[in-house]
Length: 324
Ligand code: T6T
Image (cartoon, rainbow, N blue to C red; front, side, top):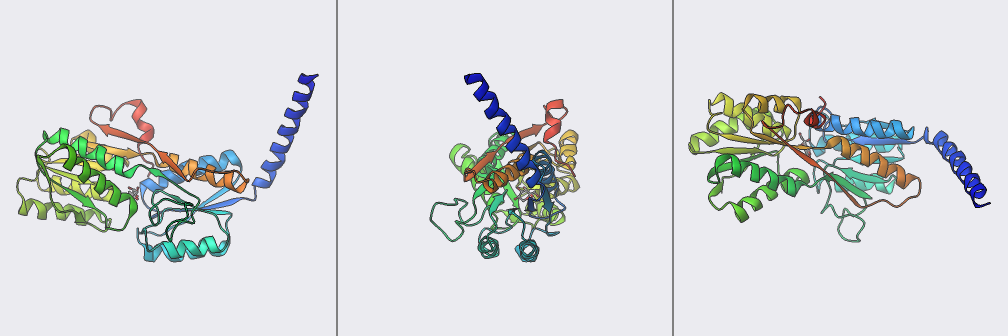
């Protein structure tokens, strides 16, 4: 008897499952990246589309062409005006994007931040101006900065001067990477001196010329930590044009094909590859669960893979190289 009841219940569950799927065709989630032309966000969208396909819903990818809150705000306003069921967004400034995102929340659109956060990144705990997003889904950026510091320390033999090439202050991810990098050096590598950070506005050419300037002031410089894709790409190019690839270690955050090629050629020593496809996938899944009335965690942490000369050609490493 029990068996019969169980199979009736199972049939009912399957039935209601497919009814739910039919309605899901109408669900649209907007994914607003930091910028559209960055392999990191392109890969995030790839993961988001895998989830969308599995769920039978639509994910629309729309963003600005540069990583800039002034450009991201009108894109977000246009997205809000279309009234998607939820918004996944990588805010390009942790304070300046609070008010634009509040407009979405006030319009009744659930917000999840992916990659970057607003305010202190701790949501739904009743504190702070930017407490309203439902969840934050990202890499552990402080931990990633610490990983970069350990890779740098090992490559330069635990002593010498290094610096961080970074985007601009006020961005949660890159601020935290720098914080983690410096904390690890201060705690565990007292013979490594961290010189002043060079901010490049996400411009690889500027990051490259900044290396030349740092080298002119500190000819003994032994390493550069490029705290995001364009910083790392620029740092590598700067080191190469100065003819210093034998003497200067470059540790990259992010792993597009161009940086992976630089690992193969020996210009970049290691890349801390984020898992952006996971961020996109779990972002969509979390938004969907919320739309279906389920509770979701306020934070989801995704992983890293360190790519270096040892594993760059391994089959297992290939899926962590970003799509471009
Ligand atoms: O490093 C990623 C992202 O995590 C960061 O917030 C901004 O820069 C990237 O998009 C790489 O360009």
